Image (cartoon, rainbow, N blue to C red):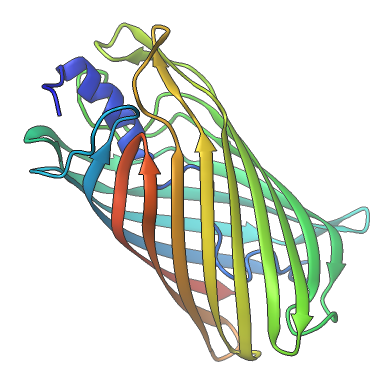
Length: 296
């Protein structure tokens, strides 16, 4: 891969720090509407490692190339009824550490601290918990990313993106037969402008990202389930002062997840992910996503 300027490295870093947050990726059961008055506190711990980088239109870089991240997310949710529709206003607070970032031997350094918080709410237009083993649900979730995360225009790598983002997610859960059900999700992410990108005085613009996610889910019993999933994303081309940077959000990923209830209020889940094709960014070799979810 040709030598990269620090300005371009800084643009790449904006994409890299947010590479695991194209949209809000789902866990099995996320679109189950709980009774009004229920509160949920969830803690996510996400580790990922990549050792391959692709700039659109250029050969892959694998030698002395990598990116590691260790991200935590606190998520607080409250279920309520508005005009007969179940709604769950929520907030997500991500923070953590992105490190050992390099492309063809050129270091991007590391970053730690707060990433951009997210406020959201799902509106369930279909809410049939008695349908099949999973229930039948259809919901719409608007999500807004607030540019409050750590960002320094002089750093090559940041957890904050210094721009607003908006995501509209649709979720559909459908029982198929017996203990098997299907979950389908679609996202459109729109990006604001980062006016302190590149050399700190340039403007980064990005096309919308489109993402489809799906799970085939098997519930052994009300306390235990597994799911196999797939995600595909496209779009998201980035432009620095009008010039295409070679970065976009074209990713295909496979997933496997196991969930277990401990008692009536605590659920633990573990998910493994792997990118099978990436154009315009880092390709994740492995991702480990752990979650503890408390109902109260």
